[in-house]
Every structure is written in structure tokens, then in C-alpha cells.
Picture 1 (cartoon, rainbow, N blue to C red):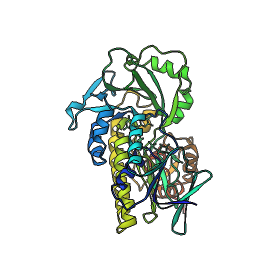
Picture 2 (picture 1 turned 180 degrees about the horizontal axis):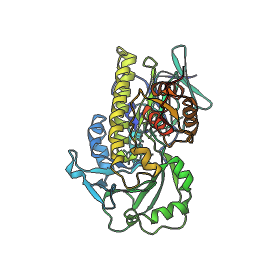
Picture 3 (picture 1 turned 45 degrees about the horizontal axis):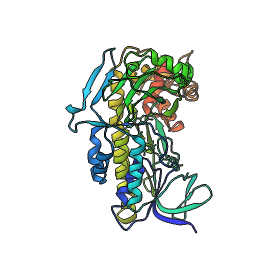
Picture 4 (picture 1 turned 120 degrees about the vertical axis):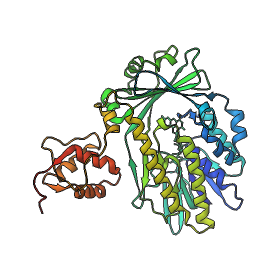
Length: 434
Ligand SMILES: Cc1cc2nc3c(=O)[nH]c(=O)nc-3n(C[C@H](O)[C@H](O)[C@H](O)COP(=O)(O)OP(=O)(O)OC[C@H]3O[C@@H](n4cnc5c(N)ncnc54)[C@H](O)[C@@H]3O)c2cc1C
């Protein structure tokens, strides 16, 4: 017989487990969490900013968290905008020290609590399809299937479950991480460290073991062009860093690198009436530079649970407000995000930094025409650049090109389209053709 639940949560990461822990504060609701893994693999994302305390207290997890996670982070250091390391002590912030997380243990703790509080947590279960039929969700779990009245999509940055009925994930960039764990040098401090370079930036953080996590971040295209997933090339770039390499002890010969998507994105045009809501990275993903992914996912999971409960037992009006709130938060995050990148001006012509520092200059009413030599732009994929160049072959009003581009490529954010149009066209001296 099919299992049936009020709420099925796809993904048991920070967002999914926070949603489950919020829902089980009520005792009139049946919930399941469906998680592909079994919390046995190490996971990247190990520094936790001090502001998470209030969220963990709300979930009644704070005491256990404090007992289990012992390595506090005192702050962060960055060679960003210059070669010199600047320091930001957490002690100067409202909430005090952060944590160098044992991430696997952290997720196990959240999952244990979910089980302990009576939620049906199912591990080693991959949701392969999810369809809405006759007022119920039907979820395929590879060979068996369950039904639910409401679904929370907490399946992370690349989740496809919410991409339905016109909803799109707009990706702001193609940031990708290539990471590994390396031995920590003796006497290093409990600080995270960031160092910018021509094609991106490096990040290192102490782990509760005597290791350091080291990540190189760059755009997908640069990673491919420079062959940065090749361990020898990666290690050679690492040896050229000034500050990151000081944190690392002896490296043996075989590096095992992991490649992970780290782009910023926002799910847009979700149907406010569909009994499904996305949370965490599945709705709005942030650059790891912000160190806000985990708190954001936990906070989002809590809110998504309230949206689900409101649909099941209340007026069903919370979802539009939640979607507006997420979009506004993401817009505010992007503002800070781009301005942080603009403070690094040493390589302003390098594609990685130009992509992040360029600003829209033209007004919308200009008449434009494609440049004769341009079919490529760093701001959009090549098929979109070709479309812009072809569309504006004859003089056209810029606003018209923007409107057509928006409806043809709804997954490209507006600012990327505008920058690409500026890149690929010039102001025409003739009027638009009819
Ligand atoms: C390289 C890197 C470094 C980072 N560093 C930090 C950091 O130091 N601090 C910080 O706060 N944030 C960091 N982040 C961000 C942080 O890891 C994420 O924001 C956070 O994990 C989001 O939580 P989530 O629950 O939304 O998604 P996830 O943590 O991605 O969880 C999604 C879960 O869904 C499961 N799943 C996916 N598909 C299915 C399916 N079909 N069926 C069943 N289960 C499924 C996955 O197994 C996974 O457990 C980093 C991110 C990257 C990429």
C-alpha cells in the first residue's frame, strides 16, 4: 500500500530538516523527509556564522549543538583588494564567535532529532519524480511510491522539483568550487582565510580534525579553460598563493578533488497557488563567500514549514508573502554581493572580475544595433549572445530587445541580459526599422 503523509519534504539537508523540526512542533500533522544519502559522507560547507544561534534555539537544538561542536572560529582573514591580509574578528560582531563545523556530524544531529521527534525520516531514498494529480502529490522513490498533500522542495541548489508550471531558476553566475581536505600547518589560527587571484579566489578553513578544507572558486568556463580540475594544475595554482599555502602542511602526491556548483540563483515565477514550496538553496542559493548558506537554509526551512502548515490548516495566504520575502532578500543579498566583488580591482579586465564588476550604464530608450564583430559576451551563454546579436542586426529600441530577450530566456537574470546587450550592441545613428 502507498504511504500517505500531509507533508513530504524532499531533501534532508539543513533546510529540509529545519522544516521537519518546525512542522513537528504541531502534533496533528504527518511528515516524511526523503533523503538521498545516509549522512555518512563528508560534506563541504563547514564554517558557521555566529548568527545561527537564534535559529537553533528556536528548533530546540542549541544545547546539543553546543555540546557536539567544539571548535569555535574566531573570525576571518582576507587578502581581497590588496595583497595584505585584513582581519575581521567575530568578537566585534553582535553574536560573538562562529564555528568550524564538523558538517557531517551537524547534519547527523539534525537528522537524529528529526527521527527522535517522530518524523518519518527515510534515508538512502532518491525521489525520481513528483507529480500533482487529483489534488495529491505522487512521489516516485525508485520502485515504490508515496503520496502527500503538500511538498517542500529542499533538494538543494540543482533541484528540479520546483521547475514546473513556468517556474525558472535564474542563475546569477556560474561559480564553481574545486575543493579538497589537506593537512593543517602547525600553529595556524582558528580563522577562515580568503585570497583573491586573477581567475577567482581561494578559501581555507580549519576543520575539527587536524585538516584544513581548501577550495578554489572560479567560473565554470575559466575552470574548463585553465584545466583547474586537474590535481596537478590545481596544486600548482595553490603553490602560487601567498597566504593560503601557509595554512597547509605537507601534501602527499594524490589529491582527490571534488567539483561542486556554487552559483547564486533565485527561483522565479513560482505558482503561488501550487501546494508546493521550495526552501534553502532550492529557492535562493548564495555564494559561499557570504558564509550565510547554512543559516539561510535553516531560516528558510522554518518559514517554508509555516507556509505548508498555513496551506493545510490556515488561510493558505502565506505563500505569496514568503515568495516576495525571498525575492527581496535575494535582491538585497545581490547588491551586497556585487559590491563586495567590486572592491577587488586588481584584475578588472580578467573575465572573472569583469563579470562581477561591470555595471549597466545605458538608459532603456536608446536605439541600438549589433556590433559587426561580436557574437560572444562573458555575461550570457553563447546561444543567448548569438540571439541578441541576430535580433539587433537592424536598428531597434533597446527596451524592445530587452523585452524579447526576457521572454525568450526567462532563466537569465535581467542584469545579465542588460550587460550582454551593452556588450554586443552600440547606439545606432538611424531610427528603428518598422
Ligand atoms: C563549496 C561550498 C562551500 C560552502 N561553504 C559554506 C560555509 O562555509 N558556510 C555556510 O553557511 N554555507 C556554505 N555553503 C552553502 C551551504 O552548504 C548551503 O547553502 C546549504 O547546504 C544549503 O542547505 P539546503 O538544505 O538548502 O541544501 P543541501 O545542503 O544541498 O541539501 C539538499 C539535500 O537534498 C538531498 N537530495 C537532493 N536531491 C534529492 C532527491 N532527488 N531525492 C532525495 N534527496 C535529495 C541531498 O542529498 C541533500 O542532502 C557552501 C557551499 C558550497 C558549494
